[in-house]
Image (cartoon, rainbow, N blue to C red; front, side, top):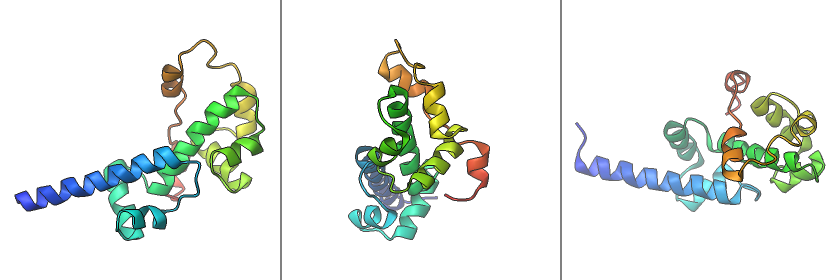
Length: 147
């Protein structure tokens, strides 16, 4: 049986995690790392990683990369930027890491995605396009153990 104090602490922890998730959503293109995110909420990096994964089903790093890949998909569909430009625009520092993570999440390299999906969302409202094109972690990404 949990006490009122335990429940109050759990709610405070969830608010802290939500603030971190919201920061990742806002600042995905900035250089973010787990240590900096944890420091901002007066937590250790290990504690943040464990609690974030328990609350949201993936580590803070995986969540950040998913947000970056999601945004990169939108930029690639526009077709007016190169894959390299998109990589750096979404906050990735390495084209190789970006391409690998993109392929893990989307199922194809970013250059192939750009060619195949250039006109995929023409005429679709942005709010709907965002939902139907959102990357979903595939089985290969989950079994790689890189969270």
